[in-house]
Amino acid sequence: MDRTAQRRIVVGVDGSASSRAALRWAARQAAVLGATVEAVTTWEYPAAFGWSVPVVDTDIAASAAKTLAETVAQEAAEYGVEIRERVESGNAAQILLEAAEGAELLVLGNRGHHGFAKALLGSVSQHCVQHASCPVVVVR
Image 1 (tube, rainbow, N blue to C red):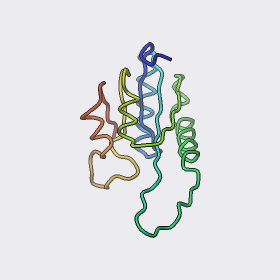
Image 2 (image 1 turned 180 degrees about the vertical axis):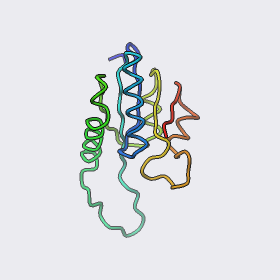
Image 3 (image 1 turned 90 degrees about the vertical axis):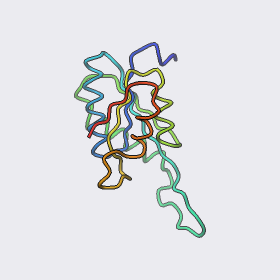
Image 4 (image 1 turned 30 degrees about the horizontal axis):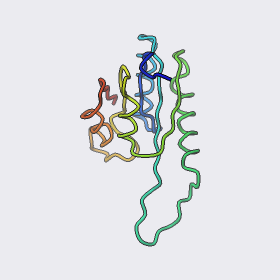
């Protein structure tokens, strides 16, 4: 499939309040533009050094997919646009940048679950704003 043949808005979703707001914003904008929303979530196995406790969630990918599906159902169903869900393993910023190639917009929340409380912009959003090949919207 040629992803550049149709209008797409890529949105990063991790279940945080700001990513939920970003998804709603992207869905509203997609309705105006006649675009498809590509909701992307990423996951990685936690880093462990030395002796460590085993990871409790043995299927992180399934958990990420469930969070994405629930977030899309709760936040974007009312806008009547096509939303494609995508779950990828790896570095969030890199995956979002690759997904955004050829897109109309990349939409992100200002901070995800792992941000510092006083930070205005998270590391993933910061990296994407600096390196994306399309316009980036950061939603608070």
